[in-house]
Amino acid sequence: MLSPDRRVLLSTCLLVLFASFSARAESLPSPLKRASELAKKGEILGLQQRVDDASAAFEEATVIYQKLADQNPSDVASRQSLASCYEKFGDMLVGNNRLDRGLANYQKSLEIRQALANQDSGNAERLHDLVESLARMGRVSILQHQLSNSLQFYQKACVAGDRLVKHNPQNSVWASQQAINQDWVGEILLLLSSYDEAADAYAQIADTVKELPDAGNTDLNWLAELAINLDDAAALIVTKGKPQQALRIFEVARDLRQQLVDRDSDNQDFIRDLAIGLENIAALLVGRGEPLEALPVCQEAVDLLNEINAATDDGSKAQLALGNILEQYGLAAEKLNRYDEALEHFEQSATVLEKASATLTSDTGVKPALCRVLSRFGSLLVAKRRYPDALYAYEKVRNILSTAYQANPSDPTSGVALTVDLEAIGYVFSAQRMSSQALNSYKEASAIMTKLRQLHPENHELDETFAGTELALGKLLRDQGEAKDARVAFEQCSQILFHLRETGQLDDQGVDWLHEADMQLRQPF
Image (cartoon, rainbow, N blue to C red; front, side, top):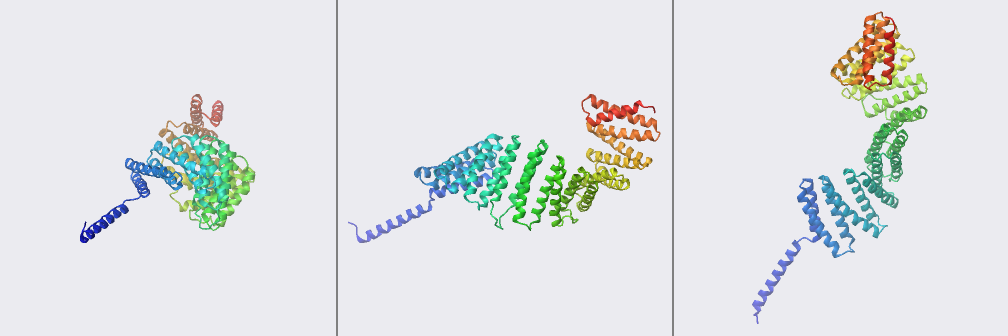
């Protein structure tokens, strides 16, 4: 039997020992906490591109989450945590270009989330998780160039997303995700050359965006970027010879931008971008021979840009947009034979672009646009027999192009553009019976083309352009009584074009030039 003192000592020891065990138990992390820490560790290691170490952490985390889920199959939170861990594991792998393994983890996450959504089809949170899993499967399938699979995943995501948006139209996150997924459906259909279906997919975006709440603090930059994506898609379809589908997509982009303006009417960037979208539509309408339909679109864009004082000479994006839309306005009027109106718009466009060019001296995109508008202005003035005004416009173009050509004499683009302008100047001089000036202008053009052909002997387009210059020069020399030089020019033109025809590299214009050169050579000198 223990003495009272020994009993007290034993009791004290037991209390100390119990306290020690309790402290150790509390210091050990719970399985859930341990799994969470491992998943976080995996994410950090993945960002450091330590893929093997990150994978080991994620794999250990999934084992723990799986055990927790197996121990309590009815515990939804455990299964959601497991799905989330697989998803993060997949994100890490995809981010490190391990696409196959990433897809496998996404698939595991998708299976869990699909099962949870099936168990409670009215649960918006589970449906949202499912949408995100399907979208991830779609994205990695695109990276693997499995377009058909990707399309199926995104279409499923959109079906589920549509239910989600209808469940809560005021949730801006769900609506924006749905619009972006619909954009992906359109992108994939474009890649699959299904242009009509792509246009249908893009059209659904506008309806989705209409559901967005009107909250003033909502970030709408994603919507502005989405409109830019639509512009790019439409521009691509134009190059594929599908103007009707392209127009539909441009109109969706316009509708998105209109909603941006409606939601934030004080945002000048939104107003400017809406005008740019309208310019895209106007250009397409003019290009497909619908100038009458283009006119009100042009006017609407001009009104928007005038509203934000876009004509100020600060070289802004809005100012450039105004110059471009005025050019389209002029083209539409010209096609309708409304020449005075066309001249007015071309002149306005040139004035705006000249201001922008003076400010953006290093911007190579503005000067070509200015040259293009001035050339169109000059051509229309020639048709109206306003030769001095036309010469003034062409001389402006010459000054710009000469600077560019002298800076890089080997550049065929600026060289050919300068040649075309010099020929236009020569024509105006010739029309005014200023023979000496006309001849000098054509000779300068011929000298430029001679140098370019020497620098780029493989460029057959330069050969044809040079032949056209020689043909014009020959006719002018003949009129001046310089028969010998005229014959040399005609012979050179004929020889070049004949060779191009024999090698199958001559276009219809070149064929006409060849016939004319041969006809000139058959006449007595």
